[in-house]
Amino acid sequence: MNLDAKKTMGGNMNEQTFKMVGKDVSVYYGQKRALFDVNLNIRRNAVTALIGPSGCGKSTFLRTLNRMNDTIDNCRVTGTITLDGEDIYTSGIDVVELRARVGMVFQNPNPFPKSIYENVAYGPRIHGLARHRADFDRIVETSLQKAGLFNEVKDRLQEPGTSLSGGQQQRLCIARAIAVSPEVILMDEPCSALDPIATARVEELISELKQNYTIVMVTHSMQQAARVSERTAMFHLGYMVEENDTDTIFTNPADGRTQDYIMGRFG
Image 1: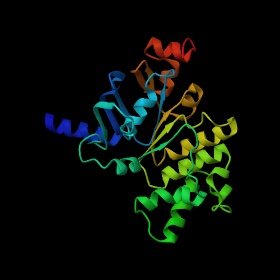
Image 2: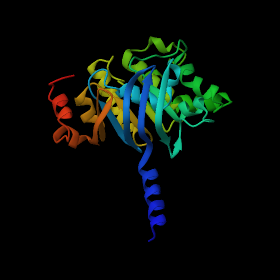
Image 3: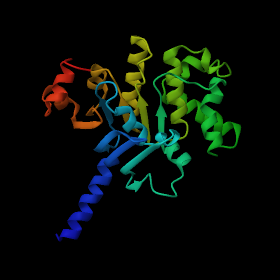
């Protein structure tokens, strides 16, 4: 096999294995540098957890994956981030379409001040994914089922989304993200505002969702990372210290900073 063929095969294998690839990613807020040359491959249909102490850059990196940093004044991103091999920061990229493909669930549940039904139907409506009521009904039901919420709310879809409990609101936000058929779901500490029972339900849901979606999750809970993720990346002071399969990170980390963080010596 010649070298070009090997390169082509290697490239295809990488595209099959990795949904998103970050290469030499740095983020600047004005003159302040928040991320330093991060290289991270995000695997398809797996949960990748980003861990590290507060202010280490994990949420900053997460927001680069669907260009949420674009909404922050004086923010500049360098390096490359690809989605299925396409650079998401190249000119001509439709950022609205990108954020439909790479959805996001935030730390605190933030349902729209609309009915449960309209919370889920809103995205498909603005993206033109459905026109008729029957199509919206199908999308709403399917999304709520995938989010493990439909049976709890099927008889009150016209009630406000804000009337739900905190855990239900977070699952509603997950349903809202699912409704526009994303390929990647970003989660920024999705359980930090929830009680233990609601947290367990969302963790079960994350484990189910990875069959159809690629998930990247920021968490301050190392126990949560160990429970739900296949891969874990450790961040510290703007650098990605190491990335590996989750079992290895927690039982035999390569970097002393990871070991110290896991042991509770800082963070």
